[in-house]
Image (cartoon, rainbow, N blue to C red; front, side, top):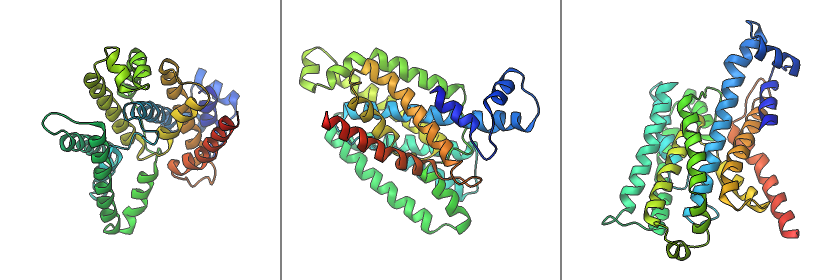
Length: 310
């Protein structure tokens, strides 16, 4: 985490030295370097770390309660709903807080839609919820394609950047930190129940765990984490899917360890990816979602092959 943040603070179209960074933190001034750090790099670094951490912990939750190794934070159509809300706001010329609010409303609407459709007579199953999420995601994908094909060329580029992940205008506040702290503390408190649930529902029920209450709590928490992450940075793929698997493959299967490690590794991974996205072809920037895939795919394959060999 420390390395990723230092790398983000020091990297960019204007390189800064470690001594300059220390000086600016101890005695901030009005120099160009101080303005770059205070107004651009520090807020963007914090946004990247928070977003990556929220996606990673949401991925851990989804993979446990759905008992599906391919589950990720977007499996219930949350990113599709947020994307439709954000793209609609872009079409109307909105930006900033209006864009973020539109994305958040779209994400929450998608969550309500999935749960409403899958909840029949007050009862729902994992299979019905999963299938409903896949179908709703496909529907949102069709709406997104319609918005892209009917938009002017001036809006298409900003839309595509948002769809592939964009942290250039992202900012986080105390509410984001409170939510992440809630996720960490709640995950640690529920870690024993998650350990049991990962061994099977029959075992969990036999040990007295209230599965209905636990599932509902976890679903709502994961949906809120994902909606907040998507609102902050757009649709950044791969983090919530791969980070939990990486940690499990190297031995972190106990959720008392997996939860905090996922937060640290997920946040650090997205911070490094965002730093590379804005420096590889500087002054131009790449969508951060492209970089996460480029880094994550070979890394995951290498760890998987190494684990199988052992």
